[in-house]
Each structure stands twice: as structure tokens, then as C-alpha cells.
Image (tube, rainbow, N blue to C red; front, side):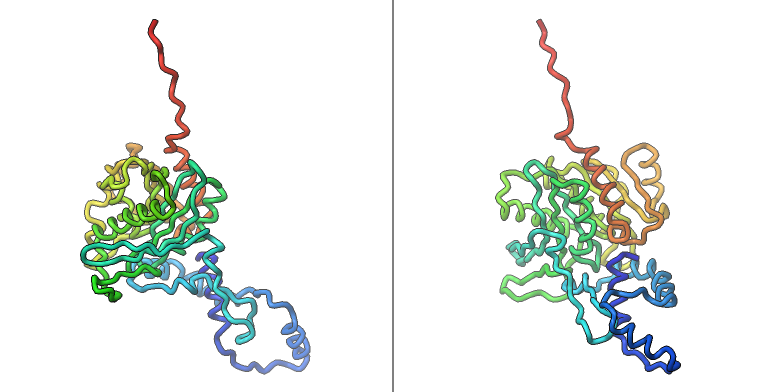
Length: 340
């Protein structure tokens, strides 16, 4: 379970009404003194911790493959005390993790998409890591990972996007009316959305050219970054792509995302990184490709499905090392031999 999920569980338990307990008089004074202590969070009861820990895996998988739209404004909520009603929940601001947010208008013939993104621009000549969340998540699911990645690569930029129907990205009809669910979440559309978003950010920040990029996709975001790399719509700026714990699902509206995914992952241009929570995600094609050295594989058996939240530091270090392996600016070419 990630630290963010634990914090949310603690806050939920704190807000639940309590039944009055009959306590011996000898302990009454001690309890009154305890209430006057500081507002620091106290550990959860062992029963609550055990119940919470045992449900981590199933809860993470369900939230990543469903179609629930999270409330990103309260994704990072905390409480400063245990007594109900004493301290309200205080959302942690996205500014703790990213430098800027933008709402980028993308006008098309049949719709207008307002892409919502979080970004920390790269330093001059620094790389840009483009992060795409999984289904049912938002751009803030990469918040902890973004902080750790910047520690490992201080010159790096972070662009965390939000897909249509997720976070605060919205879609409007040609008449200006906001489209409700169901959203068209086919792979072609979401891949085009990602490419367009990156180019809109380039225009917004007045970059003369796209920086060197690593595309990172978690769960159902993995097929999107792989498809963008396969299309080549971003040109040679894409150094490589990383897929975090892809889990196939059975819903009809997701099936086309996985058609030929392993083959596409192995054949797309650029370096390839696959990070998994377990080797059961590997099919025969990926096993053969790994033995042939076609991609880099990292397994975190102690992590749940939300690898970037459960193991943000380790995940960031692996991704940073992957960038260094594929960094073209670090290549030192031999001097030309001049014939006499």
C-alpha cells in the first residue's frame, strides 16, 4: 500500500463516529491528559492495519481497471488530528510536486479537448519525462515519482498528462457543450491526444524544438505510450519508452488497447523498459524478447499494481538509469580519420 493510500485510510478512520466506552475511573484522568497532547497522527489499531494491508492488492487492481473518475482535488488529503471535527481535511496542493499546470485547448473538427497537465519544465538541454496514468487515475498518481525522479535527475522536466474522462481534462462539442460520459477511449484517439498535448506544451513554452523525451505509461497508459512510439509522430525526440505493470482487462472498450501490444512493444523505435510487480505479466513473446536482450526488465515483487506510488524512489532510480543508457548527448564519437 502506498503512503498516500495509508494517509487517506487514516483520515477516513478518524472521521468515523465513535461509540462511548466504559472505562475504569483509574484510567479516566489518563485519557483526558492524552486528549490534550499534540495533534500528531497516532498509529492505527493493529486490526485496522491488518485489514488495510490485506486488501491492498485487490483494491489497487480494481481501481486501475475500472472507469471511476477520481476526485483529484482530494487525492492527497491529510488530517492533523484524530478527534473528529477538530481539524478538517486539508488537500495537499499539486504545487508540492509540480511547478505549473495548464489547460490547453485543442480544437478539432468534431470536438474541442481541454487537456489538463502538470509540468515542471526541464533545464536547458535537459530531458523531458512524459507520464501517462492508467484508467481511473489522474496525473497526480505520478506525484511522488516526479519528486524522486527530479532528485535523481535535477535537470529533467516532468510532464504529467490527464486523459479525457480523467482528472480535469474535458471534451466539448462543436457547439461548446461539455460532453459527458461515456467518452471515446479507443487507443487511436488517446494516442493522438497524447501527441497533441506534447506539441501544445511545446507551443505554450515556446520551445524551438522538442526536448529529448522518455515516455512513461502506467497500466493502461502503457499501450498509449507504446502506440505513440510506434507511430513515430514525435520524431527522433523520443529516446525510449517505459511501461509500468500493464494488466490486461476483459471489458470490451479496453480490448483493442492490448491487441498486438507485446509485438508493438518490442518493435517500436527507441529504448524499451518494462517494470512489473510480478513476472506473471510476461507472455511468451515478451519472455523470448527479454532473453534476446530486446528490452530492459525490472521486477518489484514487493510492490502492488501502483508501482510508482508503492516504490516511488526505486522506480525513479530505474527510470533515471534507463534514460542515461539511452541519452544520445552522452555519446562520444571517435575523431574522424584524415587520410594523408
